[in-house]
Image 1 (cartoon, one colour):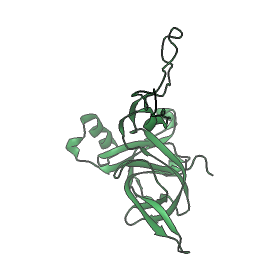
Image 2: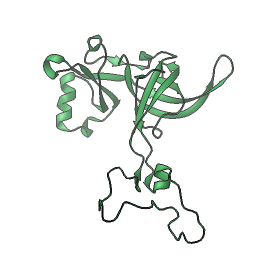
Image 3: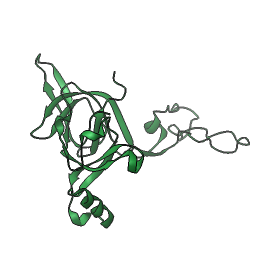
Image 4: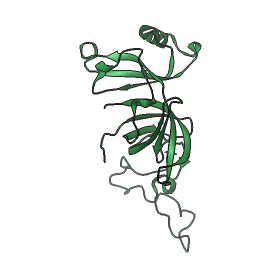
Length: 211
């Protein structure tokens, strides 16, 4: 990838382009991020950069992580993520990555953790159909239905769509457009919706499958 940054979802709003057309956007507080560790082929077998985002009090960092940050001579960070850039030699430990790493019009992929919905049935969780609430169906109109045959295979196959915890999973939305970049306030406005609640941590990278 060419560019990447860690940020925090602020919320959604709308802006107008030069033609007066309204554009729904999600505002992200992107960075500033600092390069905490640089991995090389000689030491680690591959090239990558570990980036930190969000300040955290030193007393909230355990001893191994304190040593990790002290080795790079950077302040403790709340979020650490690793990215494999096309050219890792362009950045060194301690360098700052700001919102201007992306330009207006860039196509990006945004990854976040979706909102948790709690325990949900098959209709809400997998968009399943319900039975008719008429004669003879009984109190099972919203149940999952048959689990499997009785004697063979005498078990439920893996992957069966069943009730369970919904949401709170890693989600990536691809091919979103950067509409506005505010370098002074470290803000990026991206067209459309992105996963996660307000103040949720997200990562913005160059689109892998550019439309």
